[in-house]
Length: 95
Image (cartoon, rainbow, N blue to C red; front, side):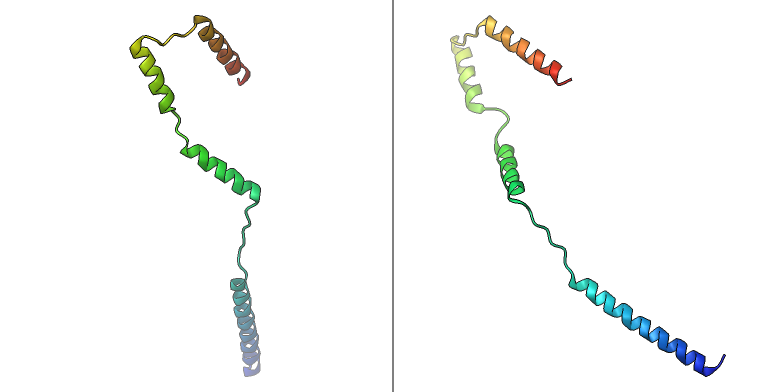
């Protein structure tokens, strides 16, 4: 192999190394950007409000406990049966 060939190979290698460095610099310049829609922000606000709402309504539970303890809590059997039937039908629809 002649020296001239080696020099040409070295020049080609140098040029490709420069090109790859420039390409790497350009990659760093670009940045990712995310935009959240107003609907998504509203949804997140509602979701946070739901998370803060307790599953058990303490006031309602305490009111019913007081009525039970005092003997004034009275529920119609008919109301209980109607509610049970509605719940049963709703569970069948979801299956």
